[in-house]
Image (cartoon, rainbow, N blue to C red; front, top):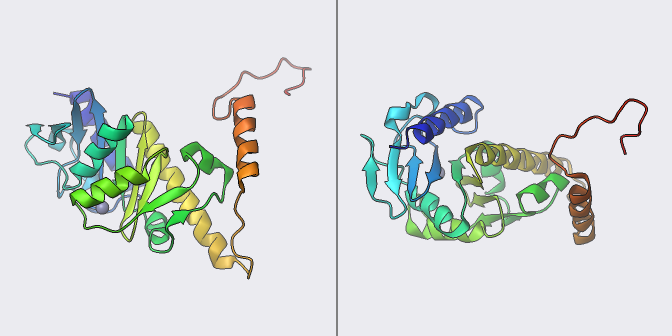
Length: 225
Ligand SMILES: [Zn+2]
């Protein structure tokens, strides 16, 4: 059942661990197909996770397949699927994101690429791990966004598929690292952020230029513009 998805979850988990974005058992990964979700098991070490250990649950949280119980954060994953129509969810305790989640209630737009994630990144208020309260707060914080921080806890990133959710995890961690470096070096004026007009201009430029996609090179001698 969901063999391809279970392999993909295990592979993404090992890659996230290799990249230092999840450590030991701090993080969980899931991908949805229809009414079913392949999700990392509770207590698993993601760095050496086997596909055979990935659990399959349904959107009501009922265990459907696999020898191990699903992550204790399954409500957080299911909340994102039920409300936001995403294809994959990655939760991690990446260090820069978790540091920012100890400082702010919302990460401002410090880099134009944040608009790819929907703009600012909200910080969901603190609630104990695995609780329905936390799942609800994070689901709210994801409204119109591809990522949210969890106060004094970590990060959740979503995407249309697993590659996108993993990429959004890397991006969010990079934006948080950027913020921390800028804030650490900031003078009395603090960190400069992009205002609404600048953000609108970025969105217009991205639409006009098909940002994020590759383009065929111009014929030699022709202008690339
Ligand atoms: Zn966590």
